Image (cartoon, rainbow, N blue to C red; front, side):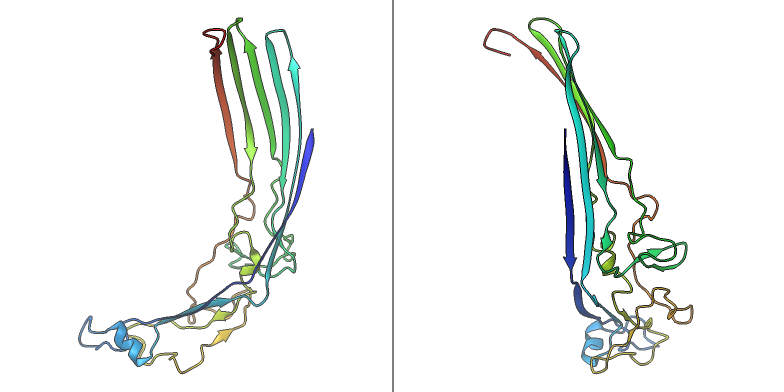
Length: 249
């Protein structure tokens, strides 16, 4: 019997820098389809999309693993031996050491903050039923023929993802770039040029600064709050051994 205890720490400061995208919008002619040139827009200095992110504070992911097992060999008869055991694996859901960031909730249509609105600091519900049985069988059918088999369940830690497991890399720990939608027919002047400042909005987790009249295009990746189990596999094997001669199996 034995156990294993680990405390994981994953610190990250992320910043993609700034990215300007130029499309064939401002150099296009309204009476000539497909007349614009992205390179011409670049020379003109009119951007069609501006992206970028920079964490306001370090993201400090913390989670704990604890594992305990018991195993014993039981010689049932002179020909049959059983190897019986069970293991319990506990992988806690990650939290942020300073409760930075959050996860997007589709039902509430907003970013949920750790420890608020009835959620724990981890936000994601824990998975606490990871019991892993193990069994092995060795049977000597005859003096020269032996059958060995075994199997079990094996759990593992979730794959780490800067957005799905590390809440500190999400809103409201990241600024929001306020850049309107640019179209070839609806936008006359570039909202931002390379000589003007890019407007940054407060990182409001309720996303109240956006509306149907003022849309925001972006992406969220969040875990399932109520169904994020630890990954696991079933593994088994069967081995047949026969003594062909005194020196060969």
